[in-house]
Amino acid sequence: MTVNWADVRGRGWADPDLIRTRLAEGADPDTGAPQFGTFDGSPLHLAAQWGSPEVVAELIGRVADVDAMNDDRTALWVAVFHGHMDVARLLITAGADPWRPMMSGWAPGRLALAGPVPDLFPSPPDRQGLSTAEMEAVAESRRLIEVLAGIDLTGFGVTFASAISSKEAIRRLDAALVPEADMAAILDTSSEDQTVLGLTDVPGGCVLTQPWGATPTWHEVIEPLCAGATAYGVFVNPGSGSQGVVGVNGVIEDSDTHPGGGDAGGHLSAEEILAEYLYQGQALAYCCAAAGLRPIDARAVTGPPDHWIRVHDIDF
Image (tube, rainbow, N blue to C red):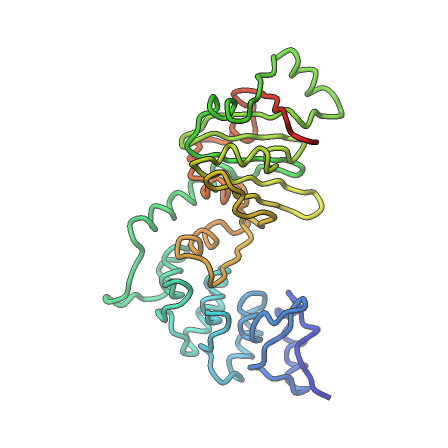
């Protein structure tokens, strides 16, 4: 019987007894391991993402090439991207090359320069460091994450719209201001009005919110807002997590995204890979940065908004 890795999933790669058992039974340390119906990597790559240093050390001693590529990246790159610096150090000691170019120019060592341990690897003088724009992106990510940290958005819809004011957003949506007296009654009801949104100006654009629903992320809202600009919406579904919608130049460019999910595919640009690295687990800050907004505090999301508005001509 052929022994494979089919039943080792996720955190199973952190179990040294399980991995040693599979290896003793004859599982190939260099063979791709099927994960959730697809082949997501070699055992070493998967252990670099999900596993423990003990498991990684076990596999290092058995693989043919500690720096083998899978899906355009090495296990060292995976360890750095997911913040497993103890694993990264093990791989370096075993001979992995931190300055091998991959993933749109992001060598593991250069990616580490943007992370919490920028001196993880000694940088030879001829190696490329971070550009001015990349250093600014790193600094802004840390600021935005701090500004927007700790907000519970379960059941909450938000859209960040670039380059337009709240006044222009009202015009584009053909919306009307909701009087304060009416708004007080709406907030007191248990069945919230899906046509009502909060709207707040911030540096770089404006923010639409709905503490009780997903209306800010509806295509009928995002499309007019993103004409000649960018809008990124996210609804935090209580059952399935963050669901994003991206609008650019009046067109929905992507939907059902997983903002802040740390998806670093080789099809992404250098800027997109950096954003995926910097904003892992930070859906709100990710969307805000993607739209180019620069709020100085969390009020645009947590409220109270500058205005409450009612949108029309949306089929609810």
